[in-house]
Image (cartoon, rainbow, N blue to C red):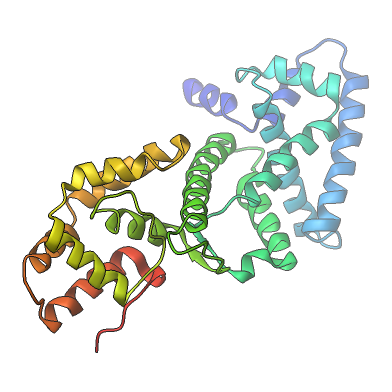
Amino acid sequence: MAAQLISLADQLPYLVRAIHALGQRSDYHDEAEELAQDLSSITAMVAAKFTNNRTAEGILEALRLTVGCISLGLAHAHLHDDAEAALDHLIEHGAERVFQRGFRLIKELSEMPEVAMLNAIDRAPQEHERRLRTTFTRYCEADANDYWTGYQTFRREWDNRSKIQATLECAKWLRKHHHNGAIRDLDMDADGVIAIALIFAIPGGGKIVAKAGQKDLEALLAALRNNKPDIEQSWNDFLNKIPPDYQPMLRERIEHLRTSPIITMLQTLSAKAKPTKAGLAKLFQELQNHGGNEIDVDYA
């Protein structure tokens, strides 16, 4: 039982562990009073802006968010999970400043994409406010008497969204360098853009195709039929035209695409002088699986 209690104490929210460390010091009353005042002020502000400062539950929720946000700010200061170091940091910088650091992290995370898609709603001011509130609640709510994994969860989400952001930036670059001129549509499926670019890079020459239609598909099949390109060489030619920052991610996508049924379908259909309508329809369905709304092909 003792081992379990120690384990729990070591994994409480960072702020709570710092307060426990303060209680172990011989002369702590001044620091404790100042910290209590700061926490009260921060909790009141959080209740007024994010929960409900007129109900007990709203204030309790604000306190949980305050505990989590300050703990996040402390964890981000790279204090090596040391309660004494966290306490010294709190005393030196003040709880409000540490809270602001944690909240800035939350704000930055809320501005990062959750999915690799863009649409008009994402740019609405009310959507930004909603995402901030949701992110604050999801990653900062902490129970002072329970295990806290807030920073690890935050870091995992940060890393995940960073990858999504990189996917979006790559897709934007591909759209900007589309062979027929930049694509300026506001809506975008980044995964679809990348899939189309890799599929339509197969004929070789390094041409960048970020959006495709029926004629593009027919031209792709004709190029494969006439030139019989080396697919690996075609992808290398394509990658040589891409900024180095995007190449590792694109190579990962190529690994997945290499064994995809669409490669076999393209090779099979391009070997025929005149593909059947049914064969083209099946190819269209497979293209939709990869390109989604970024491909516009209409086979009746």
